[in-house]
Image (cartoon, rainbow, N blue to C red):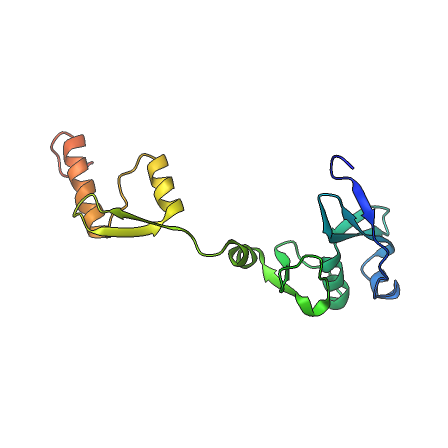
Length: 167
């Protein structure tokens, strides 16, 4: 369906009875189901005591039921084998969001350049160099010493010959 509506309805037997979910305030379960945009990833709709629905991934649902508590939002469910369709408990791991993102992103790309002060070679992360150039800064420098020398010389010319900005 266009707009990311519910597409394929999967008929998978849920591994836990409702009695284990009642203490979390769940009175009903719909699903698991998947959306057209990613049919491998399954979702579950939980009906709460107050009548609201709570939609979560099937992996988060399994970890919630297994642990007996709601998984906090700052924790992600990681599929160890990289397949979002494999929701076996042995394939799921709880990770902090930053650690999870770092694992999927891989190593940062590096850029080689030359220090504008001494001419030495410099290797920095591409995002750092891009941000410096976007902000109009000079660099990257090979060390704090070179950055300090450059900035001191820049202040001398910028502030009319004074060596300090506030003298």
